[in-house]
Image 1: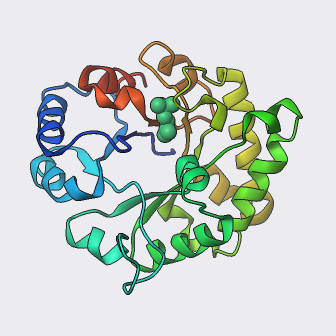
Image 2 (image 1 turned 90 degrees about the vertical axis):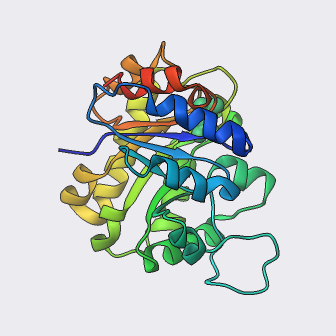
Length: 249
Ligand code: PGA
């Protein structure tokens, strides 16, 4: 049985009081599904978030980290810094990091290595742009993103990796991939993994969908056999909406 995960990516939202308020609302919600629940606040609030969720099922995760272990990288955050404040999972390769901070597949391969070397779990994001989908290249783009960042890895580390398919045209736009589009791509992703690592790795891989998931569409998207959860942006900023999605399984 694959793990179901619903992770909230708060992006650059919520200062400390807002973080505390949202977490306090989240802690009041009732979970009726067995999905793993994660939230990714901004790095400056990770410690506080970790402390305040300590006794709950909510895992606090990071939105990003640097590939170097330490050193002269002004403004950056390392794996050991994250671990020292209780964070054991990191989102890597989000399309906003790729688009606005020039993160390349090569850089992401290094980040993945560093996270794994520090015994962290990685939620690795990828997805095509609108033009790619219009021209029918979405599978080729996605396959390349996965191959370049992950295919140097040994099969044994894949239990520390979660994949997140996030078509760029669906992120923050209100436009969601149809459940069928998500299912088709997730099945393709699983096949891509299978071709290199075999059935066992591919079958066990949790593949999340991200891009305008809302309480109103989560159930249908999550009902697809190859969709194992969601990476949620906008709708993760409201406790009721986020838990409506968590409970959509
Ligand atoms: P969205 O963001 O749910 O606001 O579309 C998803 C994401 O960027 O992970």
